[in-house]
Amino acid sequence: MDNNNNLQTTGNHLLVFNRKGFDPFTVNVQSFNLPGITLGAIPGATYKITSYKIIGSTIDFGDLTCNIILDEKMDSYAQLFKWMMELTEPEDVNPVMYLDCASTANLHILTNNRAVQKLSINFYELWPQAIQDIQFSTTSTDEPNLIVLVTFKYRLFRLVKDGIEL
Image 1 (cartoon, rainbow, N blue to C red):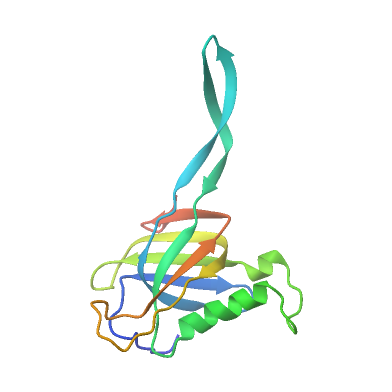
Image 2 (image 1 turned 135 degrees about the vertical axis):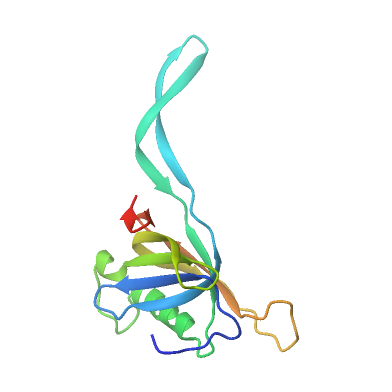
C-alpha cells in the first residue's frame, strides 16, 4: 500500500484483506466489534417439569462490523465497493466460485504508538455484506475523520496471541 494519508488521523487497528488472485489491501479501523460466539445446545430428555440442554457440536459467530476511516483518495471505499459488485456478478464480470470471492482478513490491534501488535484476529472466508451511508458535510463536527460502517460475514475467526493461533 502506498503512503496514502487518512483524512486526518489514524486508528490503532488495521484490517488487512488477502483475496485470492488480488493484491492485498489494508484499511484503518477506528472501531469494531469483536463478534459474539454462541455454542449450540441440543435439547436433552425432560425430567418431570424441566428439560435440559446438552453441549452441541456447532458454533455460531456474529457479524464483524467495523467503522473504517476513509483515506483521502477513498481507495478503501473503492476497493470494498468493487468487491461487493464482483460478488453479485453484474454485467461483464465472469461467474466466480464462493471461495474465490471470499477473503482471509487479519484484524490487528496495535499499541498506541502503532509499533507492536497486541492481538490479531484472523477471519476466514470473509466477505463484505453491507457498506452504510457516508455523511459528507462542509460544516464543522466533533469527528475529524470521515468514517463508514461496514458489515462483514465470514465462516470463522481465530485469535492470534504472541504469534500463536488459539
